[in-house]
Image 1 (cartoon, rainbow, N blue to C red):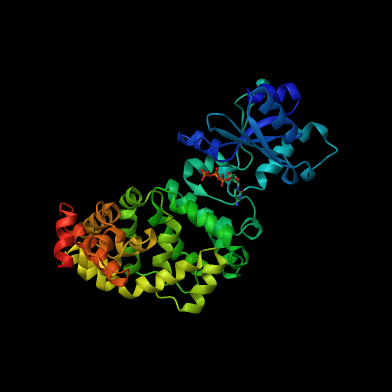
Image 2: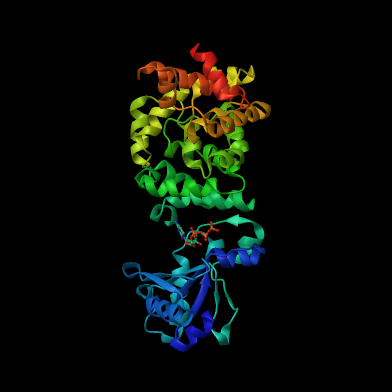
Length: 399
Ligand code: CTP
């Protein structure tokens, strides 16, 4: 249909980028990126109308997204005609436009297009040896300035390399390293770097990618005072092993913040402040990190000793997800299980029959911090034994 609509508007339409790459690799991909030679906005409007979908356009970039009722979405861009190579040679325009669009992209494997118009439906446009690189497993930039034009590609190169088990090609690697040494990554906004790091954390093997970022010294250009060591790696490994369970307990967790708990551990306060600001992280993150950093060793010992939940509660309370993640990074499998049991218990325990007011009335007491203390004691008892009779225990406590 997308090709038919292109035909009706007399515009060449292509599916490009990751979708084509994954199609050739036999990997499922529902991110459809369309490039139109002509007016992408007009095309998007037309498609949305025909398919009864909603269109959101970004006029400045000549792009639009179409949202279907079932949650499916396609992105539409306009091939940039200002890049005409030889505008005089009209017959070439068709190809040179899409070619220019593809040439601006990050890596050869992402720079293929498939035409959707009926006459040429399914024709692959591979101008830069993309398919060959895909077969050989190579990540290669299209031109020398690629990393300088967009230094986040330094991180993307690692992401694709690790995702597919490919290798960054030699001269691309040299360009990457040179761009890095010249400090270009530092010029990128924290938000864009953060987005790329977040994407890495959604990969199947995020640790391999982080390791590679560290080995190529990319990590140092992102977090200047992070020294990647075996110890840090072990912590990250435990953290990743614990994510699934943490998500069950907390609902969705912010993996980026959790990983930062480890990467930024033991930073001096000033640098931590700067990093937190640059990456748009809440200030509370830094405060929590500093507090947890000090007690994590102690908590680890307590967990290893399997102390009562009530004792752990006195030190740990009801931790936010990142604090829990921070501790998880210090614990081995069985110890993690114990911590997860603790967290489940602490979030599921509630006093059902006893309230502050009820205590005041029942024993004819005055409102004072003592009431809070009694409630807390009772809560701790229930943490250790959810089966207790609250009223009976309360009587004992007050007595
Ligand atoms: N792109 C680029 N430079 C960037 C980001 C993106 O050239 N810094 C191009 C790439 O050609 C990419 C396309 O824009 O194929 C879409 O980007 P994105 O959705 O981030 O990546 P995908 O290739 O679709 O990868 P993924 O499978 O992770 O979605």
